[in-house]
Length: 438
Ligand code: GLY
Ligand code: MN
Ligand code: MN
Image (cartoon, rainbow, N blue to C red; front, side):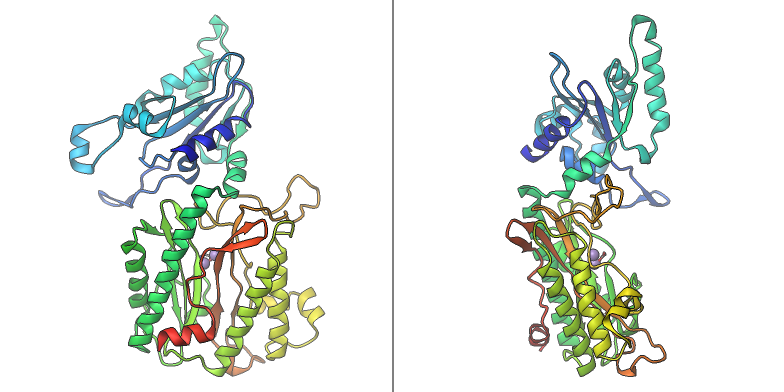
């Protein structure tokens, strides 16, 4: 449980003396009638606690004077009947022991303890955008009722996520190891889907490929897909968030699969695009090699000290030149870039932070500066690299490219000497893909 205690200590070190931070986990969610969605903890709560039961709240008290720092968990009590139906719960005593909190109490006692903990506290840190005002008012009212004994409520309310998000942006060793494994499992799932298409060929339905992905995730212990898989064949590949996954493939289709698992709370995010019949057509191959070159250009821009946005700019440069070379666009490269004409075929960014959330927390720009420049990459930051090209039928666009949609997406962690690729196990070159599908 060391990484969680270390993170709590690092957060506590950034808090004002004598202040209190409160972070709850995610609520359970009803799917319909008396059926619930599979439970998923809140990422930041889990980052600081390692505790994945619902109805839990973590409270951190920063040291002041002689008073030491405290980490306190509030969680569900042991309950035999509930455990017979729904399974094991730690209960406060076992949770304190197992997860290394200084103390732990039943969640029903939260209000009472918060009045005590907030009495004379310097500040309250909480996720301000998440609601909870009513609960906070109860706590503050409780403290104010003690005013005649000289007790005061915290005079300052501070937003907690900026502190935690910045910590989460830099992946520690514990996290990197899980992310590498999530990348390996997800890469294996893409290879499995390619092999399935290779042996079943055109006529395979998108959901059959989705089933291969899910099977491979789960059989290696991944708890969930990190997001709804996209299995987009033919023209569906040009719909960026397509996920109906119910079209029957046809000979000559490309299949774009964007899918990654969530393993122990960490996401992988991989896209591969392959011909359902196992052979790229000449036109498909031209655009595929272009996207691959754009991804390489983006990779070349990833090392400590480079701007976050350099990878995108490098990919766009290559894609825009290719669009001119292949007659998708006309004019000069300068025009295409200045007027952003390339967005007709490439309309999304080349990546995002990745971690516990697939689109992970962390600032992309230096918001303290007036001009908000792109922030510089530093070792430990994890990001995706995902250029693509999506050619919808349109006048003036060579027909041989119509309905081709290609994206190639990998996950990396920035390292001192460049980056570590987490998802290299998924076949990517034309030769690798065609060989695997044979
Ligand atoms: N799968 C979501 C994304 O690529 O951003
Ligand atoms: Mn992505
Ligand atoms: Mn993706």
